[in-house]
Amino acid sequence: MSRILIDLPDSQVEELAVLVEVEQRPRAAVIRDAIEAYISQHKPMLGADVFGLWKSKNVDGLEYQQELRSEW
Image 1: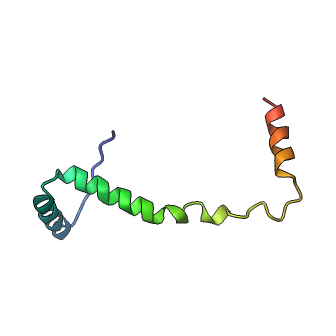
Image 2: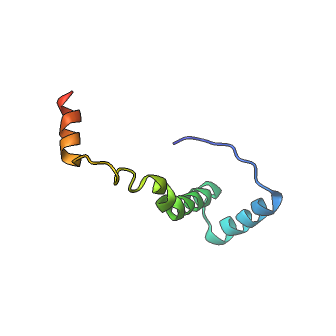
């Protein structure tokens, strides 16, 4: 597990402290859960700009894959 340093406004730190107290959980666990929720909500957008990138190419995907693998 990696450690990171972030700057938060005092208002967010105070609200986070309330959540930590109410949930009786470590602050780091609450922050990890928040980041995981953010990533989950935004994950569908990641890579959306490459969907259908090859649709205009006249290449059989299987043949292309086999040709690439033949080089191994």
